[in-house]
Image (cartoon, rainbow, N blue to C red; front, side):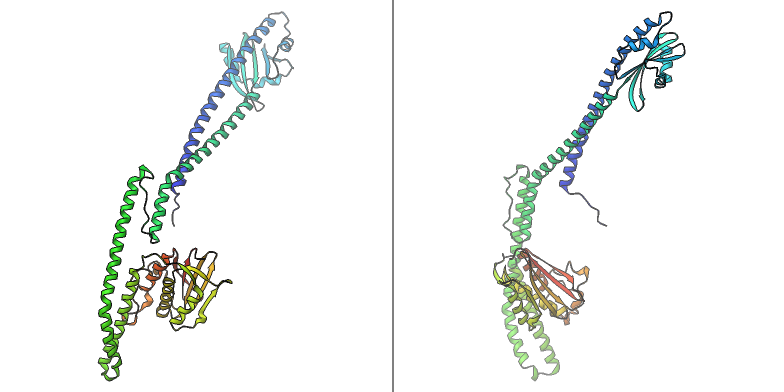
Length: 453
């Protein structure tokens, strides 16, 4: 199972986004905690001041012989967010005769006030946050003031949402910066990729400009030197193959002429001599085909000579040249036929080699289909042979490689270069060739030529 791996751009964008999110979230958290602590501390100080003032008023009223505690509590200005309670001689008092509010005063706070004379504690009353301040009035009396923090809690919630939104926006901005940075950084790499793609397509003049980016000058220079060396080596190999093939043609012609004499006089020879003469003639023909293919390979690096060609008619002529019925050609074209902008010589060689391959190894071609797919051209050659094993489909277009259906050397007149020439000529058009299984058995060679219409 292939493990998925994120690309460089994805990793950089994710890194920028994660960094921005971490920084903004940290700042938002610190800001929230500082603001929260500051607001709650200020609110607690205000609650202590209010409770101290109210305690003086209540303490003065308790000095009377018959104090009216409820009346004193109603006289206090507690507002809508505060509730004042008095614990006197074992009883609780409130301004609204709501003694149930005493349950909001924690026992721990009551003990603290009883021991130290004052205390403060944060609690939740009916689901709302509050601050309870307790002050000892007399050994048997104490005042407790509950300050509800509903508005402050809502303010902090709003602040939390705003800081979260701000952190999200900063993270998105970080991702945007990362995307822009990768686009800028990867621009030279795209130039390298474009140049490499051009070289793969046969354009050995592709080069990089070292002055484009000083930081990549070394890469550009090394890339250009590599292409120069590759061009020189390809040129040397091409010249070597062309020279060898050319030098072999003269003696081959002489041998072929001599062999033709033997072939014409074969009936007058004894059986063993006639068999030897037949083998010589067959091997010379095979050798001549090999030399022709080597010459073709030596010219394969030259640019394609493009011109409008009726590919349907070209396919029918290639079939007739091999003595096959033109009825196997299925050309689906529009009103203007199938006129593609291609190299006529190369494409005709492709069709001939695929037909020869089908005859030699595939039991003969059963269909040659030519049709357009948008602006692209597609050619398919079907045979009724054993097909091509999946393990051989990646190497069958290499030079001097033969599939398992080729048979023994004595029974195979092929050179091992036919499909290699097919791949080379198709690549000169910027296309590709692949082998598929034909429905019903056999192999299907499919050629895809981009932008030929």
